Length: 462
Image 1 (tube, rainbow, N blue to C red):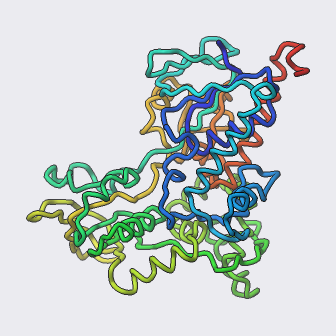
Image 2 (cartoon, helix red, strand yellow):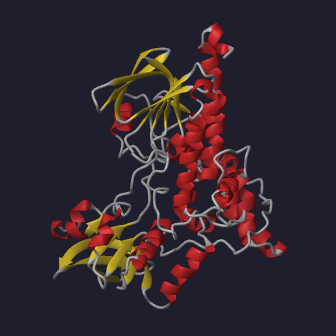
């Protein structure tokens, strides 16, 4: 069987695209979703059941449908949740919402496209003919499709220190993937923890530790020592940014600061007002301008742009103030064993002074790897065969403005697309639900148009 569409992946991008395809494809069409994650669509982020693992975007902006913005809020209310549009729902509830939304669309079998969920990993892709792609799966099967969407997401970033600088004896004390929550059960009540990275994942892990009874000291170490800002209790009104004609990063930042200062507007409103323009703004920057942004402004952009729920911030801030959590800024030189613990030797930011942190556990919360190719055998194989290339800054794989994957010659591959974080080089803001859902909707329309062109005449009426 040759499917009309194959979606490779099982995270949010994959479920958002599946949902949108079910809305626009004729019942004669066929879809294969390939992935081995048992919590399809929920992924790591939305499988959690911990009540303090909250969404970082208010419920009113988390509908999976761009044209039905109240869908998630209405789903919550139907289940007896007393929620307001600007409340920050739990990530677990959002995962259940995605599951229920997909189930609702799958229920009328006779009136929707055929969908097969293939529990396997795609390991290789060979373009056999101009009108189809063939995947090799790790269960020894093959899968053929006319249109393919790579929605594989990204993997965890490596530790911010060379492997040669980590003593083998401390490896058992290092948690490479904090979302494998079994590590929490091995932590002693008074163990000292050193978390590498100071972003959203760090805050999730700190609150998880405290909820499980941990009362020891927690050190947070990152290169700049910056932590996310909170959302205000009531959302600031978005303010359209007044941007200069110049696209030099320093001048853009200066213009935003001046607008906030002169207008008296809440800076959060200006940042939120910039959001609808962020993809177009990114695409208007030259390679050098994008590179300067990544080197000099990215860390500050992240803490202002990717904010946390007020309740979450209040709890985390209390741990900072009472000394439970200490944030350090510096660059790791080595990780060695010291007695029955690990010793993290690092240089303090802005100085030549070296100091160290002793910890019973080291937790890698440095975030996601940029391109997402390293964690995927399929993407590595496709790069080796020049079916895809990394974008020029290593943010993801090269795609055109329509999310079509580009080959080594810069040509769009017929029927081959990418979605989500893999397309960050082209779209930049493409990791949050409000951005991915728009991409999924547009991509579904593009694919539906191609399916209509290749369908038999009688099927087009269906």
